[in-house]
Image 1 (cartoon, rainbow, N blue to C red):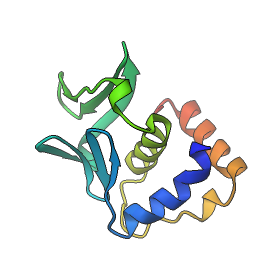
Image 2: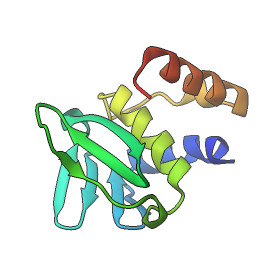
Image 3: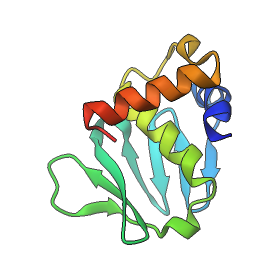
Length: 118
């Protein structure tokens, strides 16, 4: 289900909307958590470890943010969207035509996993 919602969410973000995922907010500039913001270009990776969503900033040993997974609403949609925007730093005018159906989304997710950026 989350992969079916992703194209609409990408389009919403590119049209200026901010999506809420519990304490995390996503827009076309990046991610906001509490009073701090990180741009897509600053993010090294996002991973799940020990029940937390670890958002790592490039060139930093510490996590930029690490909310608990249970706090992040629609976690799989959040992860799908963040992976998409991290892998496509050109945020404005993102071409979502490759997400025409569920199979295309599955292929994209598989390609991301094989590239080691998962």
